[in-house]
Length: 157
Image (cartoon, rainbow, N blue to C red; front, top):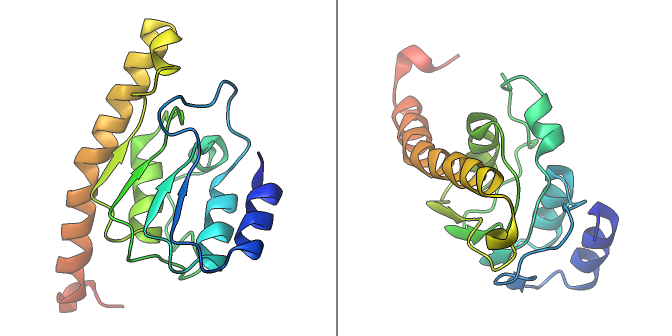
């Protein structure tokens, strides 16, 4: 599945509240769904409260840490936990900044706990697990910073 196919699902099911794709088994190949596909999906399925999908964050991780909102103001405040299967992550800060903006109430990502993950080389599995753990540790810090910044006159532009 890629961004275009995910967009077709979103357009076909705009009232969708839950989507779970290979949550326990994982995907046998790297995902072709990028953060662009996730944004499109969230835009067209505004009632989504539960999501399990693999996302390829490579293009997001290649960018420098954004100085402006990477999502054009789009956000889903209904999702607080998602499962990202075997989504690879190399730069937890970049991904956490993006995800905490798009999903401001996100408190936890479950990843690399599928049956497929256990078939991967130990170093790959452990590196991705450690990076997702770092991601999960960053989420409350980013949320607190965002909340604190709203009320701080020194941070207002």
